[in-house]
Length: 510
Ligand SMILES: [Cu+2]
Image 1 (cartoon, helix red, strand yellow):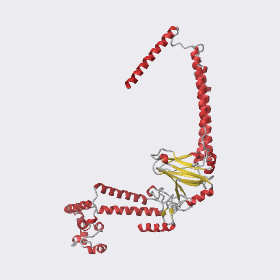
Image 2 (cartoon, protein in one colour):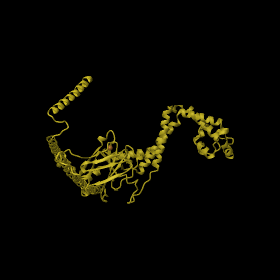
Image 3 (cartoon, helix red, strand yellow):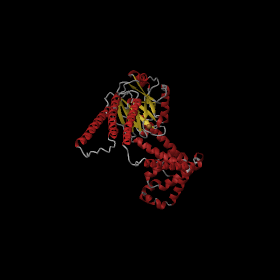
Image 4 (cartoon, helix red, strand yellow):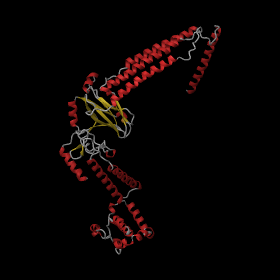
């Protein structure tokens, strides 16, 4: 097959060569040289330029008519101005487009080669230079100033009574937050993000719960590690070895604290922890075994290393013998995973403990203002004619909040809150009538390719009368319902009896 194609190509090239030869022969017969171009040839080409120009212009005009309208009318105040800015630019571009192409094709037609005409030598002209420098400068300046002014309308300070709405992005959905009755958003931090608190809103209760939860997780993991057979045996071996080399290893200590050591543990042997009546309490019945606190004792007394070590060995032996059924046997990888988890939990605990609140102008603490915040998903509502101040945050990557019907778009950047303001002017219902589409909805889309499910990152926006908006907002749960139980967005309100019993349970756990 390939051979066949190759043959066809070769035959084609040969045929072309033969055709060229025929042409050459025929022009030689007619007594005319090949490179000689007649006046008719030139005029034909010149006229074809004009034909092309007319076709080109006609197709551009067709595209303007077919696609020039940005379908739904702008549904926000600044949207009208933004559309004007766009149209203004388009008209300038259109004018320049037709002018330049008219000159380009027109000159090609008019000044086609004519052997009787000599080209004018025209190297420089100050007037021309001035014209094509000054005019574009003025036009560009107008475009830029007009553009900046429109930008300023969208991003300038919102009025104090603007409705404040936070739009939070993550892979792959949007969450919207309202301030609640106090008019302030609660502070937020990623360290407090949980499935129940996707925005990481900080409240004093939330911090306490998170800390208790972390403590509990650490306790469980450390409990497991304390009962791991391999670790216990390894520790025991290490301790034995340290006793064997004790004269060298810890001699210094003992000498240094001689009197101390003698005091406390003179004749007591391994059992001697007289410093600690607490210890006696705990282990009175257990005899040789239990001195869970002797690390502590050792640190305090410094000198009784040997006794401590022996004590710990006895303790380990006791576990190995008497609690054999509770021993865990884990692989190295499992142990490492648990130890790693403990380290990460401790870091997490550290970061949460470093959170600091601040006080708003009205005297509220930023750890208190989050309780009544309303968090919604799936769809959010805005009152028509009300100025809205949007704040954008992102959890993971850069997203872009795009609300095409309002001619609004803003990047949503992790770590850098962004914002703009807008005033919706057309309700969803009115727009449905305008577009004659009963299913129409305003949308918030993601306009940055942010990952696999980017296409699905969408939220509906409902623009409605102030009354309808207010009654909708009233139905949205506050972040913390009653006694510190985070509400679940998007579910029916929980009966208050359940909330209370749940709160009771949680209080017991923590
Ligand atoms: Cu996105």
